Length: 345
Image (cartoon, rainbow, N blue to C red):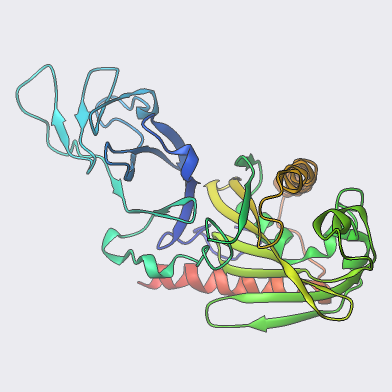
């Protein structure tokens, strides 16, 4: 599927963010991930659990079911499934039918996020989850500002493209991000590593209302990192270090972007801002969230407009790329290789 040249739109042997930790509770949470209905909940000991979200009896959505202890009871005919997915009770008979088990998905909770493995359970390895703690998520000495998850009506690869080329901020976000008009003109450096691929931009931003709120004792402008760092199709980090114009460190602010395909043409988008300065400043956190409330709809509108255009075309478009697309194009190649490796397995 465009912009990749693979029939399978996404890798399945992959960890994805299923939910923010605060979304998963003793109430059933229904969410579609990679085209599959899933339910998430916590067992009585607090462990997050993920099961297939469709009752195998008559395809009733289990998100409308109820918890009985750690088991999920379908509220249509009462089929009941334990936290591992096994059917343990059918009220209308003494035995349970064959093939009545629900798929159980491995889950890991880390840094305020609940991750789900959508591939072969025997191949799940939590070591491959991006290190969100190192990015400041739920880490000591960092403030976290969590935005509600939104679902974009556009394929997940369009969101990856958007995040890997931050020059768009000079146009789509010209009225929402202070200093955004400078970003497109900042030279970019590509850093291609084994575990990540980063487009690095470091620019000098003149004094503006945001930097004055962040650093009240800083009179001049700042030297700011506008990184776009791909760690997996599920996660991209943007932002980075902030210094004085003389190069003295002021702090680090990261924007964590969780990317989880819902269907082939929609994506769940998780955004959090982390910072290691002014961590006890609620006004700064409120400002970050308010700015995010203005920025995110602009990205959503752009991606949905591109998706609508792509779906209206009779054939995939012939693209014209520029130098700023280098990082996004390399990520496309990396993602295509990941999907192709599953096809050959």
